[in-house]
Length: 276
Image (tube, rainbow, N blue to C red; front, top):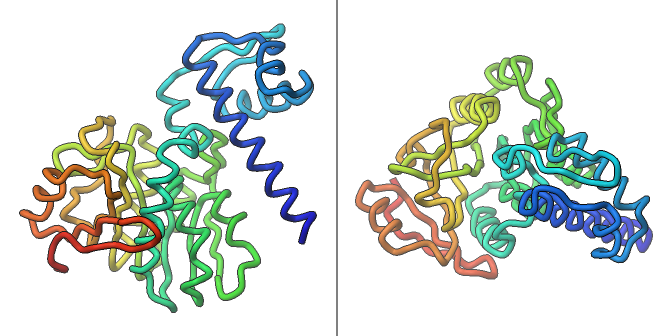
């Protein structure tokens, strides 16, 4: 158990270091590898390994002692970048959302980092059947007692640690679940959006294959813009938000009879609109 705990801590430090590296490179355009080693107090070999992983995900380019930035939109869509954003709010939302899941359900989980926080809590709602195309979720739930895990394959995308493409969407369309839990990159005009079309295709297929849907979004998503429309918020059975969400945003959704669950920390929540 101690060895497993140590391994988890090392992985957590590595992911946090990679997130900071990707943000530094994106902000500055280029960063020297020796500067990164000094910044983190690690060997250059360790930094090289981090950069190799980030380069494989398409998040930066490594050449001759320098890491240079690529597309900022791709970096911001990556799981490495997203994992470090609004972490407290994501945990708050996940604690409220897990209360909406009933033992015995079959649930689709998407590739969002908020849903990954939820996945860490699903043992408390077992037995469950979890269907997902996300490698990080698969790794989180494998071997968890009471969780039947259905892994959806396809073409693997490093930048989001997920399987996507026609093979994946075809598999999803041949399945039916009780519930789909997802997040989104942006909420504009009371609809959710995402920057990447392949991601939208997967989420939409899961949306259509589920009897009920729950959306998890923190306050920073409201008013953001992304390219591809996914679904109106009125199409969800519940929208779970964090306690910093503006009252005006909640009231607007409430006026449309959308069920809004406001997370209040430590797993407590309140319903801001009637259940439809």
